Image (tube, rainbow, N blue to C red; front, side, top):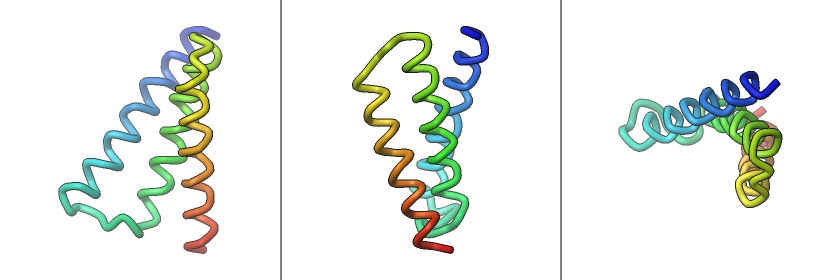
Length: 78
């Protein structure tokens, strides 16, 4: 279980960094449907790792908020 959570955490980091890289350097627009999906799965991965492996509550909370923002963006864009 611990390895699974670590892998989710690293995948989450890659996805969030990729999302912000793509927007920051103009490869995609922040309104592109890819952006909230990357943030949604990125936040989920980091949140899972933060909770199950570390009980790092500030990281869990910020990733719940980030996840909620991504869900809201996806609903708004549908």
